[in-house]
Image (tube, rainbow, N blue to C red; front, side):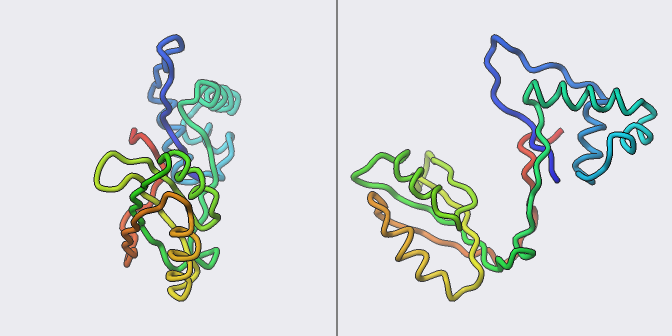
Length: 164
């Protein structure tokens, strides 16, 4: 499991200040997302009730969320592709929503730069690449150009939005 920190919060409800206990709880969960509240409490010399209350407070304030992150290879995905997509004749948001509907697509980002949209895609093996690009991505109305790059190694893979 990983902790996903950070979310834009309106000025009407400011983000609560996190103290060292909060950040220590998140650090422990980053290392082992299956650790119990009791184990966290023992490591931090507080009660399990305190840990539970802190976790609930942080989740309700949307400053963190505990989520499961799966390993690509454990599910048979051996090819990770980064795609840049240029859009024409249709709104970028609509094309992005269509791309997000493809099960192989892990993330869709609307960009300001060389590409209108950037994707991260997972495939089982290289034999799927050509069909996926031509039959799935290029077939979506509004996709004008696709630039692809295949990941040869993953140096860092984290879903922590904000480093603490």
